[in-house]
Image (cartoon, rainbow, N blue to C red):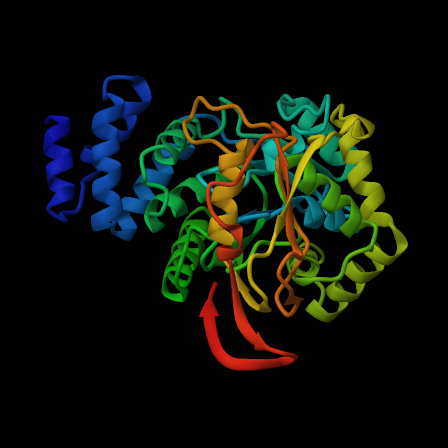
Length: 424
């Protein structure tokens, strides 16, 4: 067998055997298969797909390429949450704080940014001193004492996925349902939680673009969970517009703190409450109505905010040292209209261009840059109004295109809104 045989087999749409998958994926992991050949196989998988049996086998290879975290030392039921990724998605930080404040243990292993989507670990590392590399003993101790801990994907947990994930990010092979399902579930199974809630995002700003893709990946991830004896529940949520008002690592931490202080009320808040309630329902075995009530109380009483701050302090973070760029640029609207849509994908690409994401796996993220949205769907806009504020590296920065194009507006005639839609 050669790697060419495996690549050609998948290019022709054939099912790869257990031997084929071990030869290619483990060969890449051990260094006997080069980047360029693995990239070709990943592209063939993107184009031709995988059977359920192939997905289960690749997931198993990823899980057992390292160690599976033993959470038997954690007191009580453990519940994990994962999102398939989106622009401005900081739900993990909000939801984990709420759920842990209600007495449920949340051992969380999160990822870094992937393409135009942000990563929870990148956001947390914008806090000076914050450690995402806790060893197993410290991780379990913190989960018991604080209620939750968030760490990066360690070299010992699903390391094959980590290597493949980095290659996918820079070879145009991110948007593959089988590979996304294997990547997510290998980390979730290796992380050891008893129960898992999956936030499956669909829309312009998500990795998944259609309802059919979201339903398919939900089915696959539930099947993988069932295979390993895990209780898995999914929520399909929409990602056509950026989540919340901030895009960028330090800026998103500031937004999380405002939400946990009960100072915001928007779609991101509603989504976070729904996800938290689902986790509380699973963790405590109560009705969803009771779970929603407890989530609301956690936010109103400040318990969720206190839990977040406790977690940051426990992991060495100095929240007072959090900084955003001193250089800002207001983006002024070049058109007048009534905002009916916003393109999350283009905002994600803009954040990437500013330095808030990675174009290659060697890139370093600038945690201080990003975007704060000043206008939202439903707002009327005049020429010259501030649409958003960019936090940039240099004061001379100029956008490469008219950012007004990221908004879809109804044209206004005087004070009367026309019914026809124009993408401006």
